[in-house]
Amino acid sequence: MPSNTQSTALAIGTALRTPDATEPATPRRGAELFPELDLSDPSNSTGPDARAMSKVLFARLAELEEGTHQYQYVRNTLIELNLTLVKFAARRFRTRSEPMEDIVQVGTIGLIKAIDRFDLDQEVEFPTFALPTIVGEIKRFFRDTSWAVHVPRRLQELRLTLAKAVDELAATIGRSPTPAELAAHLGISEEEVREGLVAANGYTVSSIDAGAPGSEEDDEGTSFTARLGEVDPGLDLVVNLESLKPLMAQLGERDKAIISMRFGAEMTQSEIGAALGLSQMQVSRLLSRTLGQLRNQLLPQD
Image (cartoon, rainbow, N blue to C red; front, side, top):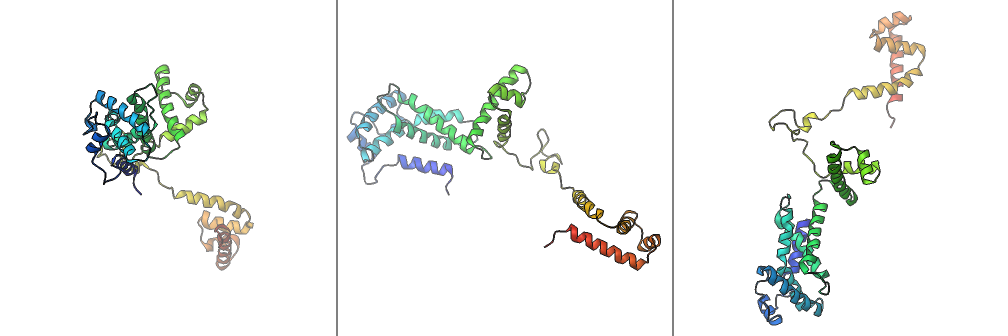
C-alpha cells in the first residue's frame, strides 16, 4: 500500500499533468486561449503578474464546463501559477523533521482545494483566501502523521490546549500547575486533564536502548533496558504458599505434623517416626499420600 507521501505525490502529479497527451503543448494552448497573457512558464510569474493572471484565469474557469480539456488546462495553470503560495506557507514548517518536498506536496493539495472553492465574486484576493487552506492542510498532515502512537483527534487537540495552559499558569504561579489547577483554568474535568496528559506521551517515543536524559552515551547501565525491572521468581513461591494455606487447613492433625516436621524442621523420616511412634515406612507412605493429595488439589486439572 503506498504511503501518505506517495499518495500525495500521485494526486499532485495527476492534477498537474495535461489531460491528454495528444493535445497541443501547454504554451500553444495558452496562446490560443489567452493571447493577452504570457503563459509560457506560469511558475516564474511575479506576485503582481500572478494575481492579475489568476483573475483572468478564474474568470475563464467559471465559464468553462468542468471535465473538459480546456477546464483542466486552466485549472492546472492556476495551480502552477500559485505554487509560490505553497512554498511561502511551507517555509513556516521548515524546522519540522519532515522533508520540505513532502510539506510542499501536501500544501499543493491545499492549493488545489482552494482553487476549486474560490469564487471571483468574493471581495477577497485569491492569496488571502488560499493561504489558510494551504496552511490548514499542512497542519492536518502533521497532526495525522507526526504522532508516534495514534491517538484520537480530540486528545491531539487537547494536548495543544494543555500545553498552552501549562505555560500560562506556570508564568502566573511560578511552578508547574497541578491537574486540578489545569482543570479549573480550562473549565474541564480533572479526569479529562489526566487523559490528555497521558495521551501526550504518545507524541514521541524513545528507544529502550537509549541512555537516560543527561547521561553520557558510553555510560554503562544508563539505558532504559538496563534499568528495567525483572520478574521476581519469588512471586511464584508467594502465590503457591497462599494457594496452599486453605488446603493445609483441611488436613488432619497427624498429616499436618508430618508436613511441618519434614519441611519446616527438616527432620528425616526416621526422626519423624520416632517422634510420632510410627515406623519409617509408615511415615513415608503417609507423606507420599498427603503430598499427592495436595498436589492434585493445587495443580490445574486437565
